[in-house]
Each structure stands twice: as structure tokens, then as C-alpha cells.
Amino acid sequence: MAGMNTASLRSIAMVLLAAMLWGTTGTAQSLAPAGLSPYWVGALRLAVASAFFAVLAWPAWRRHGARLHRGSVLLAAACVAVYNLSFFAGVKSAGVALGTALAIGSGPIWAGLLQAVLLRRLPAPAWWLGTLLGVAGGAAMALDGGASVRAPLFGVALCLLAGLAYAVYALANKRLVAQAGPAVVNLAVFGLAGLLIWGGVTAYLVHKNGQTLGKKILGIKVVRTDGSRASLGRIFWLRNVIVVLLSMIPIAGMILSLVDSLLIFRESRQCLHDQIAGTIVVKA
Image 1 (cartoon, helix red, strand yellow):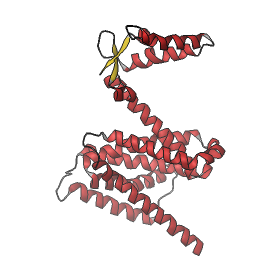
Image 2 (tube, rainbow, N blue to C red):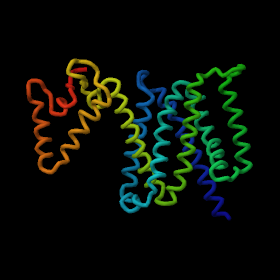
Image 3 (cartoon, rainbow, N blue to C red):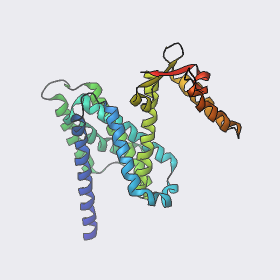
Image 4 (cartoon, helix red, strand yellow):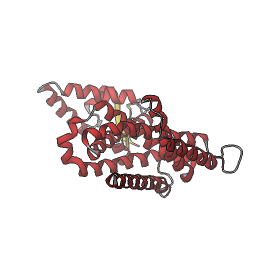
């Protein structure tokens, strides 16, 4: 019994430490440059987390990574990606104190409701008490002494979405941890979440400005040959996918890839994939 009590206390202490670290992320964002998008903060956070878990769990990943259920990993990763994007955007809109309280406080509420609906198991009485206190505290902060919500409703909604995403992640993560251990699971989930956000950010930048992250850093972009904006579909399918598929042809594909690269030295600076798509790279 004493062993169980010690384990319980250790678990509670770890949860409190996690909550404390979680609560400082919004503050860290507020200290960043004013022009930095909250979506970049979320993406950078996942990149750092993925690198940390890669160092920590890579040896174990080689032994246990194949055991993970892919559907659960994808679900958990999607939730982590949604959480990071919605949390930092919500905190920036609603404010650090309210946004963090809503996201952290709503997470257990969402988890209890999901447990009741999906597992058909009602939460313990302590959950109901905690939920009551959480809802009362969140309402008090949102109203701020007035009769109506003073915080931006969109920001509040984003923070609640972050809490929901984290709750679904926690339920999926519980199943995964039983298969391979926390470090291996977090490497898979956070790594995939980082890839999802990277893909989303890249698609947004290409759609908006014809730039990948690398092109944005270098100050160049892709446009149509007449100087007009190139659509995401044109850049993705005509400029990239067609050449990639052709390059998979044995021998001929290798020659094609070489020719495609060497055409950059022409006066027009157009590679083969640019000619196919009717695009050109120019200074942004």
C-alpha cells in the first residue's frame, strides 16, 4: 500500500510539474518579437520537442517503434498539431492568463466527457468537483467582473479547441504508451505532428506567396512566366509531382533529373520543371 501511495504521489508531482511547464509556454510567447506569428511559435516548439525525443528515445525506437498502432499515432499527432497551433493563437488573442487557464482547465473536462461518451464510464466524483471549480474559475476570468465575456470569443474558442485536442491526444497516448513506452511514443507522435505542421505551413506559404520556407529565407519566390501569382496546385502538381514521377523511371529518370538541374545555367534560369509548369523563380 505504501508503494502505491509513493507511486501516486510521484505521478501527481509529475503532472503538476508538467502543468507548470505548460503554463509558462504562453508567457514565453509573450516575450518573443511582436511580429512573430503564433503558428511559428507552435511549429518551433514541436521542432525542439521532436529533436529532444529523438536524442532521448532513438535506441529504444529501433527496438519498439514497429509495435505502435499507426492509426493511433496519426490521431495523436494530428491532435498535438492542432493543439500547438490553436493554443498559441488563442493565448495571443485572449491573453496569457485567461488563454492558458482555459486550455489547461478545459483539457480534463474534455477528457472526462470523452471518457463518458466513448468508454461509457462516468468520471469519479473528484472529477465533477474539479470540473465545477474549473468552469467557475474560467467563467470568472472570462467575465472579468462584467456581465458579458470581455475576452475575444475567437481567442476563447481557440483555447477550448486546444483543450479538446489535448484531451483526445491524452486518451490516444494512453493506449500507445502501453505498447512501447513514453519516450518512443512521444518521438513518434511529436515527430509526425511536426511533419504535419511543416506541410501545412509550407502549403500556406506556397499558396500565399509562392515560397517554401527556404525560398522565404533566401528572398525568392515562384511566379508564372508573365509575373502573375502561381497557384498552389500548379506549383505542387506541375512543378514538382510530374518531374518526381518521371525521375522514378529506371535510367531515363536519372538522366532527366540531371538535365533538369543543369538547365538552371541557361540565360532564362528555367529548369525543366519550371518549363512544364510555366513558372520562373524571381526575387521576392
